[in-house]
Image (cartoon, rainbow, N blue to C red; front, side, top):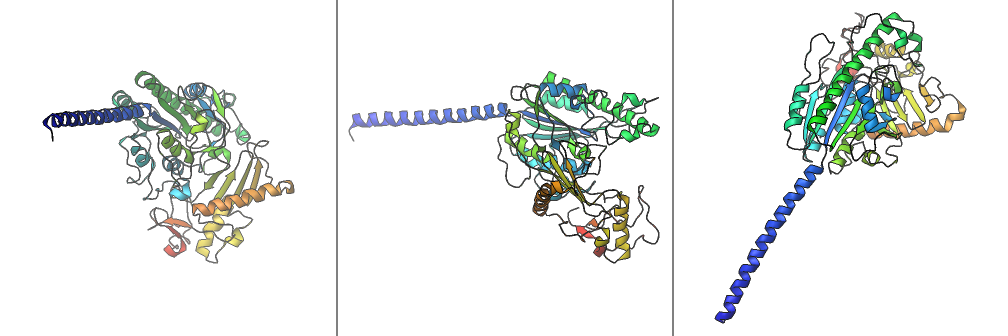
Length: 494
């Protein structure tokens, strides 16, 4: 090669390599910048969960006799949902839905104090994979630990002269102050769950009554308990206010905040709306229009898919829930045609075998009580020790019919059962069919056949043997220790 051309070739090669290196460096810098932009665009997510509080006991939901100024503030600054639901009105099953995006039967936690299936990827995995730290501050009530691997977890803090432990405010404040990456934090209060404050000389006029508790207005013990419950609500409101103040001090506007309560105390262990309908208020500055209201049906199983959607993740088919991010952004679109509910009274404290299932759209609700007195004879097995518990469950809820149907727009407190009204035959048939389709998809141990009434227990009968006394149940001596493992439906993962 000519020396002159060789020099030009060499210079050209050096220039090309230098340009390529510079381009690659710039590309790397651009990629890092893009990652940083994405990180900054990912909002912190905080979910504050109260414990055992009726949706009707908030100022923003219409009760002006209870002090919930912090929740009311959130409603003014964000979006209030009128139709938010849990599938089960007890603590552990309700929380497991939020953390897994699955209904109780599918995630496995459908009796209180039981565990989620061990092979499920919960919020701790899903959100970590999207670049978030996942934190639990307060009451847990979920297990096993291999499913719920929190990056940080702080227990409730004991405090003198109050009936319940407090949320760990000092740890929360320190975390807000020092966090370096997007986080998803669940602040789980132990209020207003009983034991309540002791209120002296309570007055019924200071309380609001509804069709489900109006008959107790002259009961001194109920008034005493209800007044203490209101006082405990007020105390939780103070905790919430402290958290909101810390957010104002340490966090920027790009923080999504959700307030809810795990289920209603007045409908605990039922599938009535007073148990399953939950308060749900979301604030997200610059995204949610202040003072907005949504009447769309959303569900606790929708929380994790929504969080993942906001974080830029894809929601797979492994979850029951759907993202309602579009609603938060102002679109009034249907997320769920139906929401569902289940009831399991049988657990480590109770022996009442009385399972129920529920399906609900915006207007109508259908309930089937599978062991009502109407059908209990068909549920019997011919084995006296098993039939004792089946009969016991039916008798304990002797006033609850086999089928219930309610027009919730005209009867929101479910006082008038339309199940036998021929004018609603088509509605009942539609809801019944769709409910059993859902149950089959969930892997339910119940079906549309009367005569299938299993006694359920964990593998090894750990604490779930029905034929033993507990602090809340007494079993006749003739029935004690008469049930064998073959008399139960064994739930392997519990």
